[in-house]
Image: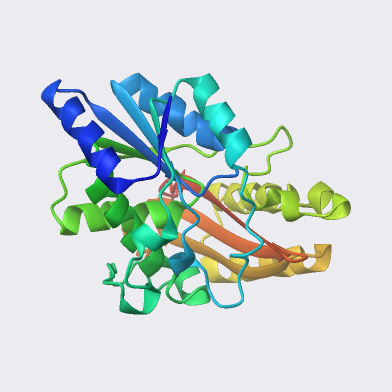
Length: 287
């Protein structure tokens, strides 16, 4: 596995791949890798000749009160895992190269609508930072395919919209959420959970499953239903940010015609913000 940091070196290598007509897959990450990230790589390896992974903790997507400085940097262990799984190239750019003029002067990419709702309403500017760094990395790597986890469901929709709107010549793949044995969605932030919080954390997904089961059993009062479950989570010790049922494509509140839906959740447990989602299909009720 090659490990590089310079953009110019990446472009030189990319030109050699292009001459050989290689299909290039890309998995952008912020490091502190877990099995969820490795599953993205496994999927990429099935569909491409070359797999590139980037590790870059992107300051542009962190809010002023968020955990940029505390975000774990585990480059040595990350590199070892990626080499073991057969990644071809690890790109570790420097912030001074990515944002050469500083964040305040940086040209940005923003997807209207999708970036402002749900998680975007709770974290203003977050998806601007995501779209900007992903766009920049796409320009550097120039992949044919790119892979993202479905755990960050809204992020995936933002990136898909950006690729379509900017006429980018690549295909985006969403990969199903990887979960621990107890159902907790794998996340780089799970290590922040204290022992008792970690025991409670899988309850978020269990409550989501219970909520969707009620819908399958006939309940259609979505607003009341989500409020009930937010209260249940609060009583258990969670601090819900949002619990929303949305159309999977637009992420807007569903109309009577929409039947492909997703339950989106974000909740604090102690100082750790957990996010999860559960997609489901609404079956027409029998009269």
